[in-house]
Length: 179
Image 1: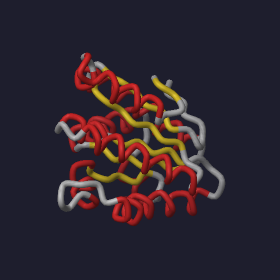
Image 2: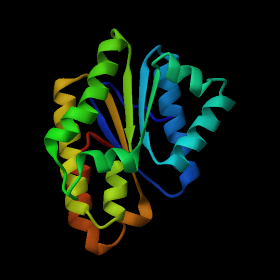
Image 3: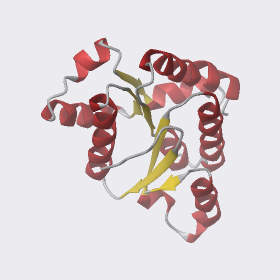
């Protein structure tokens, strides 16, 4: 089970989509079972599989969304909103993603808020490694202002290789736990 305590920023390097969706589903279920809120920023494919897994665990994702316990954003669309010219706009990130986290934190009333995001992996896969690192830093700034746990994920195949060693080490340093 993936456990990320409040205020922590963990990263998972995964070998397969099923490994990722299983981990993220457990992570989201943990928040919901504790009466908290999960923020899921994922690709359509991963959203679909996670929602399927939630339903198998007897959590209705549609009802959870209506209750405000599951907030889902499309990762590519969200990226485009704060990268309109292909560069990370920190103000737009704070305004968009920050507002979602702020709202979740204000509604949580002391229960856990857990966020999962794979926008950094999308950037890395597009060759925008520095933008991925910048986005990781913005998530850390957001955590300084709000109490929530954050899980990021990258496909292992994307980050392997000597050409990525320095950038990968930097990404690992930006996280409080490496899974």
